[in-house]
Image (tube, rainbow over all chains, first blue to last red; front, side):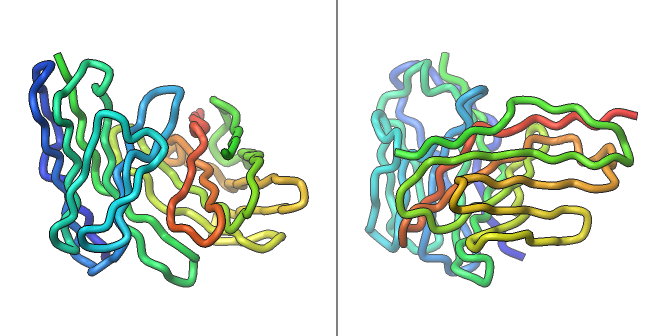
Length: 114
Length: 110
């Protein structure tokens, strides 16, 4: 089974802090994604990566950056956390298979910025 | 951009059949996905349609009409554990990213 692991399940950070959300996948997938999920807004794509050191902006990249130094690891960085970044963050990994492009999600990281 | 619309909430009875609709507007359509998400958990893959027609997988089926920009997820013999949010997602062009709808919260009652 594909495993996508997010290092922190629940975090509470202060406004202005730098926050790292780590994600690791164990299936050698090239494509990895960071989404945030908010009530009434659904899943929104922040950044994605096609390969090591490659990154592309998603629909809501403002206030975020990412790092992909190794194929299995994709990190989301909040340089200076703000209260409007309180959300549930989902990392995902993708394989091209018979289903087209199946995305596998991590368990999610609940971030509260106070 | 892409507009994806789903009903916000639905309620159905255990043992019954429910149909969750999804409409979308996008250029370069290249596939539609359905995901299930239980409260506090990650979404899990249910189905994928890229050609018109019905895809059946056990109690779940998904239908696509590309000309109408329309899909539905059909759940048969509903069980209490089917209470969850159902997310419709569209892939555009040859790219790898999916755009998700806001999800339909399904409640299954006795």
